[in-house]
Image (cartoon, rainbow, N blue to C red):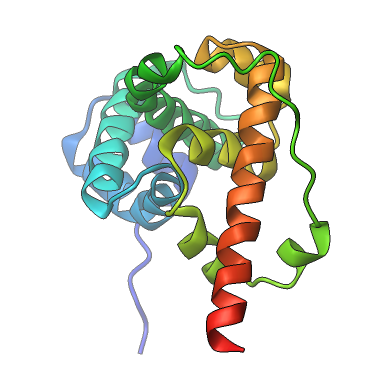
Length: 184
């Protein structure tokens, strides 16, 4: 059985640059799973992730004429998705800015606990983190942003980013320990 592939990625993008709704739909369908996978890491619910995904595609289609075909499309789209998820989180972050994290002590954690988890387990556990911790954990540990970059994106200090990350890891460790005790 032979499945119809559709246009090559570069051709599809070029058609989208002309404003072709048919090709935008094809591009959306081709990269929907990829986009949802990223969105689910940043969002508390599937509905929120779907909203982020759809908003990101709207932004991508509005900006696609500026996309440089010499660069990987997935990386360009990923940046839009992450930024869309961050934009959505900013309002949550503003509410939590009242907490003074500058003088908070960093929390230590045991790296080996995280090394024993598979990706699915970790993603499931991450959904139990508060929104700010989840966002910073994703940006630093999964997407590879530095604390300085995260600070600029989220309008907080780099030290606050470090503390939120440490707290996220400590909370994950605590959740893992509880899981191990209940199953052991």
